[in-house]
Amino acid sequence: MWDAMIIIGLLGTMVAIVGSITMGIKRNPIWKKWLAGAGLAFVLMIVGVENAPAPGEPGITPSNQAVRTVAQKPNDTYAVNLEKATVAKVVDGDTLAVNVAGEEKRVRLILVDTPESVHPDESRNNEYGKLASDYTASQIKAGQTIYLQKDVSDTDKYGRLLRYVWLEQPTDIEDEAEVRAKMYNAKLLLEGYAQIATYPPDVKYADIFTNFQREARESDKGLWGVEEEPAETVAAPPVTTPAPAPAPATVAPEPQPQVEPQTATVYVTNTGAKYHRDGCRYLSKSRIPMSLTDAKAAGYTPCKVCKP
View 1: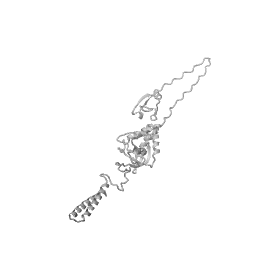
View 2: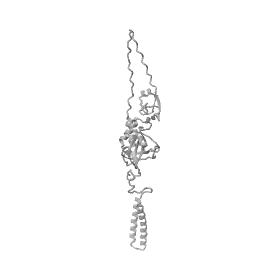
View 3: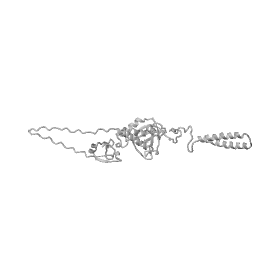
View 4: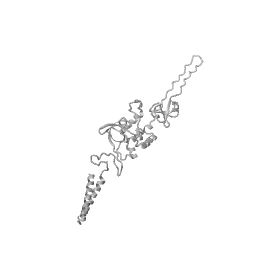
C-alpha cells in the first residue's frame, strides 16, 4: 500500500509541476492551482516513504502482526522472535518436553547443567540430581506456556532443542533484571540447583550467569547448602572381663587387637571442601591425593556424588 502511495505521489508531483509551468508560461491564472496540487502530491509521497517497510522487512499485515513476540520500545533497534511453547512434562532438572506448533520436542536448557537423575547409566544418577529435578517440577507444570529463545545452535547431537526458557514474555532480553526475574535457566543458577556449563558458541549470557552462580554459592542456596549426612560411626565391640581363675593368681586380660589406621587414598581439590573417589567428575580441574585419615582430620567431608 505504501509503495503505491509513493508512486502516485511522485507521478502527481511531476505532472502538477509541469502543468504549473505550462500554465505560467501561458499566463493562465490556473497555474497556482496546479502548483498547489504539486504540493499535495509531494506530501502524499513523503507519507508513503515514512511508512514503507525497510528493504527485506515484511510489511505489517493482520496475518503477520503477531509474529513478533517481544514488544519493541520506541526507537528500539532490536526485535527477537521467541517460540511460544506449551510444557508437556519435566524430564529432569535441565530438560523439558514441550509442544511447539503441534509437535512434541525435547528442550535442553543451555548454559546450565544439573546433576543426573534419569540417565540410562544408573551409576551416574544421584540424590543431587533428584533434588534438582524435583525443583524444576515444582516450578514448571504441564500445560504451562513458556517462550523459547535460541542462541546460535539449534539442536544438540541428541536432537534436543537448545534454548533459553522464559517463564514470562520479556520486554528486553538484554536487561539483567529481566533475565533474573523471568528466565528459568537463570533461576536454576540463582536458586543453586545448577552450575554454569559453557559450550561455545551458545554463550550469550555467560557473564551474568557466572555472577548468578557466585551469588547462589556464597549464600548456600539450593544444592550448595545441602548438608552432608553425618559420618557413620562403628560401635566398639563390648569388652568382656575374663572369669577369675580358680587359683589365687589372677589372669591378666588378653590384649585387644590394635586397629590398623585407614590407608585408603582419596582425592581433594584446590577449592573444594569434600574428598572424592578417583574418577569423580568434580576432579576435572584439580586432583590432590591424600589418605582418608588425613582427609577427615583436615575437615573434608565425603562427596555425595561419588560416595567414597
